[in-house]
Length: 274
Length: 159
Image 1 (cartoon, rainbow over the protein chains, first blue to last red):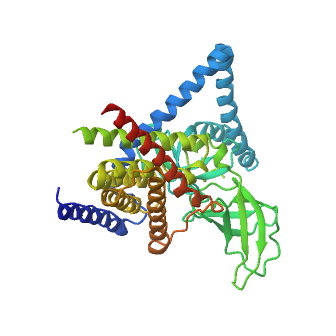
Image 2 (cartoon, each protein chain N blue to C red):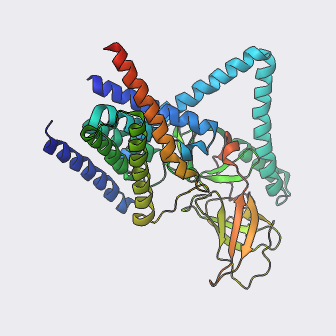
Image 3 (cartoon, each protein chain N blue to C red):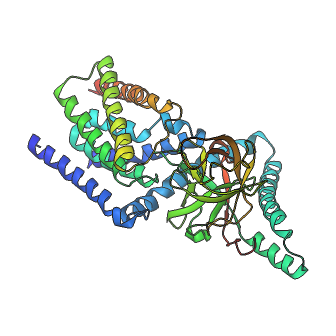
């Protein structure tokens, strides 16, 4: 191929990319069709790789230990995971109910709303932005569903694209994420936003406020219309003042990327219950 | 046809490597970028046309796994693949030191371009992970140099 043709090819490819970038502008955060297609095609590859390595790991374990013990251990671990999620959600919610009928309804709703998913991938561009799960629309996963870690602490929410077997989670440490939160002791309300480095900023707390202190726990407020109230989010690690109207408050999220193998997706809207 | 098959194998390999690295540790994804390895390797060995196509495929794939602006990774990786192929045809990059230095420079330029586009054009901050991201170009260059030299020796033996 002649050199001129090669450069024309490069120009063509650059044009295609510029086109792809520009068609996203009117769509906002909505992913392009091509992005959805790639996600759907290569998501299963990722899924398969993770399943393969998990299979190899399990196979090795089964040989190294007794097969029955390992299976029992696994099912008990899964059961403990589900129960911990249920327990934490119920602790917050039960206090608000008195009638046994209401409690029965609540128990069955919460129990049905927890879907255990495995993390199959981390955002290759920015690790604190998003993760991918091995559950999709076929498992009942939908956009804006809340995702918690194994301790029932907030991880993020489901965002597009969601394919039939895989989905994407926007982490609370993402700069574009916004969570309505309040502090545990004095119920100071603010918006939590990621700082792209794995930590978060508690925004819109006025400088004159003296009630926010270091080491205080931050919980979801439920005011954002997405996350249910009372979910633990993180802990305040620094409070500073500058020339702005608002304080500079840094929050360390509870969830840890290195310990995020399994997560719980809340498939039902628990906001009405809280 | 052979080139297409090689390209598909390269893309699948990049996805597999990236997934395995992510499962081992999230921080590894800051230092290791398997998509860049594959694009740079194809650029060096198959020159600019296949390098550019591999850049487009791997870059867009990386974008589809990311939450950033779709197309930015594709654009910079296309330029990486084309640049690596074009320059390596003009100058001799076969000696080990030259392969390393060339790969280092071109990987650093790609990273700089990618992060600059994300930062200045789209106003998104990126995680430098305490400067850990600066290790990405030297590591990419090292991996590509090893793969390139091993590939050359294997080809020399065959012929």
